Image 1 (cartoon, one colour):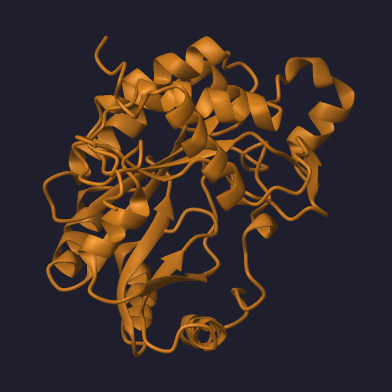
Image 2: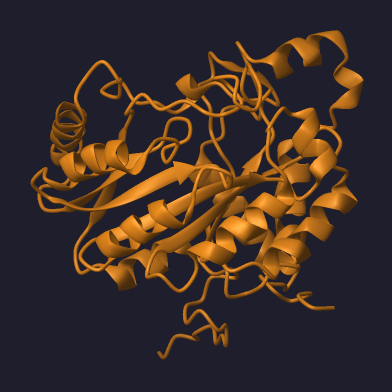
Amino acid sequence: MIKNTVKYNYPWGHDKSYNDFSAYFKKQFKQRVQKIAVDAGFTCPNRDGKKGRGGCTYCNNDTFNPFYCSPKKTITQQLNEGIAFFAEKYKTQQYLAYFQAYSNTYADVKTLKKYYNEALSVKGVIGLVIATRPDCVDEEILDYLQKLAEKYYIVLEYGIETCSNDTLKNINRGHTFEDSIKALEISKNRGIHTGVHYIIGLPGDSRKDNLEHAKLLSDLPFETLKLHQLQIIKGTRMAKQYAENSEIFNLFSADEYINFAVQFAERLNPKIIIERFISESPSDMLIAPKWGGFKNFEITAKILKKFKEKNTWQGKLYAQ
């Protein structure tokens, strides 16, 4: 018996209802590639007093730093410990050094060269993923990264977080949406891969605002998108705000977020690769929302199912 096959005509060339990062990544590399987080001890301009103090109201970097990741260790030591950890599961693979904590271009080029070159000298490391802010890059830094991109796989991840200047101010972000636009514009056409982080549900951003932001993001020159649902994390200023006045927050239930993620993606440029739909914080640090212990992949599977149920896909409402 001949099995029926689902026919699709999505521009990304596979049968998922959105432009999936894992499929894109497999095309980029011939073997498995694993990101290894490192903490080089950078800070941010809204922490050290240049633009503010205290950092973003939602931020606690302990939510994503793995056990081997500490600025008290050298870059080489962190990478080797991370590689040893993942090598137990996957015997043959290559690695990307992920400069993840705080703003990883917030230094002079001489300092950046020291850290980046050390990472690239570790056996098996074939590139860098650099998380930063849009107000922490300039032409000199980008010229250097462009040169590296001739030989290595270089990714710049910009924390845009929202397209609303009022919301950016309220979360003590310290930059504007115009800064984000400028950073992406001066980063393009350099051989550097660019990604964006965006948080759905920040206080001050309505559901309608978030959907409008999907359209605004769609016109910007970047490749990959990481979506985060707003989470209230212990040890943050937002946790204090939540305890004092929870009414200003409009947090999603799991079902609400699954539906909304599909609505957001419907309005998103189909050329944008969605790297993830949600973020996952350690349960002992998460105050709200609590979704019953669902893992990232489980929520993502439910989102994919919702796409199918609604007979919709990423970009269906784009440019409408």
